[in-house]
Image (tube, rainbow, N blue to C red; front, side, top):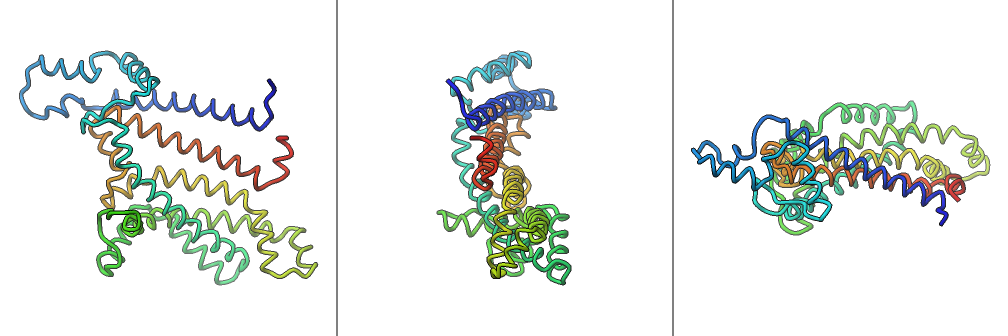
Length: 318
C-alpha cells in the first residue's frame, strides 16, 4: 500500500509525538524520583507510625522498588488504560482531570480569543501607519506587555479592576459557563496581554513585508480600495501569523500555573503545582503528558493549516 506524502508526513509526526511522550514521561518520573521528599512521609505527616504500616503503604503505592521498576510498573498500567489514583486525594487521576480540566480549558480558550482579537488588528494598524505616532504607540505598549510577567499583570489587574474598580470578582470561578467566563476574564486578560504583544510584533513585521510587495503595488495600480489591498496583504501574511498563534496557544497552556496561583483558580495548573509539591506521581505524570500531547497536537494542526492557507504547499504534497 502506498501512502500519499501528506499521509506519510502525518504518520511520521504522530510516531514522533509518541516517542516524545515516552521520553518526557521518563524524564519527569526521574525528576520526581530524585527530588527531595517522600510520598509516605507526606501522607503520615509527623505522627508516629508502625514500620509495618509504612512498609504496607510503600508496597501499596509501588514505592518499594527501584526507579526502573517503579517506572515500568507505571508504564505498564498506563498502556492497559489505568492512569492510577491520586495519592494525595485518593481519587482516580481521570477524575482529577475532569474536575479541573474544564476551568483551565475555558481560561486558555478565553485568553487565546482575547489575544487574537487584540493583537492582529493592532499589528495590521501598526504596519499601515508605519513610522507614525500610531505605530510608535502600539510598539511601545507591546514592549511593555512583552516585558511584564503574567503574574505581575495579573496583580495590577486585580488591584485596578477588581479592588479599586469592582468590575470583576477578586477570586472564584462562578457557576455555569457564562459565570465562568465572567470570573475568568481578568485571569485570561493577564495571560493574553503578554502573548498579544508577541503577535502584534510578528503581524506588524509580516504586514510591512507584504505591503511593500509587488502584488500589493499592482493591486493599488488596478485601483483597488485600501481595504481590499489590506485584505490581500493579511491573507498573504496569514502563515507567519498562524505560526505565532500556535506558539502562543502552547504558551497559554503552559502559562496557566502562575496565573491560576495568582487568582486562586482551582484548575489544572493549581492541581499540577500541588501534585509536584506532594510528589503525587500519577497526577504529575498524567497532567504533564496531557499538556505535552496538547502542544504536539496544536503544532501538528498549525502545520496542516499551512496547507489550507498556501496552495503552493498543497501542490507539493500531492
